[in-house]
Length: 319
Image (cartoon, rainbow, N blue to C red; front, side, top):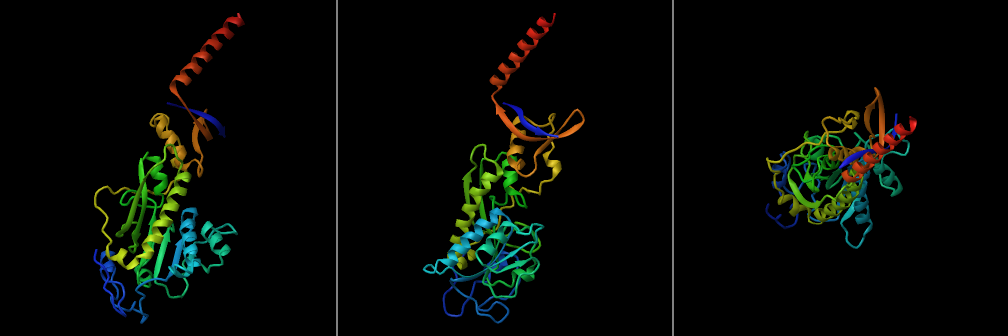
């Protein structure tokens, strides 16, 4: 396989009984202190079952799908899963705001901009692609803690760019993990639910994000339907197989022709090409590669042979 540039430009169950809340087991599993029992530490009785009061933290298209699922659940009066839904996002230079804010405004949901998280009472928090560390004090405001919808099979690809690194490293299997948030560290909390799927061949990070966002939203609703049981059946992440998915930068887009194979260059393009065009040097000038074409080696060999014959004929005719 060769690369041609098409275009370039320079667990145990919760006990029943009135007044009893979530088991303290999940707090210990998540590494949290706090007040076990039937109150959440503020004198508020803890709900044992839905409908839940939810505060959602999110920013981008991936988290927008989770918010959409929560909103649909709130609108479904027959199921009675979500009673209250409010949203926290981060400031954006765009007047319209990030995708989560746009959806929240359209759906007429209350929206707060971080670090403002409102002053209401909630049962559980939900985070999806939020990118901010949450303090223990904030987590403990929620009787059932804060859940995280993470688009990888943790502990593989902890960090802010798991989908990009899944494509970049040629993973054939990926998935979504619903986990508990731990304070001051990203993506290390107990796993409540995890599902795997094959990575579609030659998919871009953007295409894979759509698939994983829908899977994650469905898994989130499933966990919320059995929240106390899910929390008490949580399991610690394995200590083996930990990898990290740091943010990408402009340097990531620079092709190293001497070090990277054609397959690695294609994976780089599929991973980040829609965010940062790949770059290379041509006659001491930096150019952007806007599109790449995968060409079979035999086709490329035939094309090169044709070019060689054409050049030879041109040189003969010049005499």
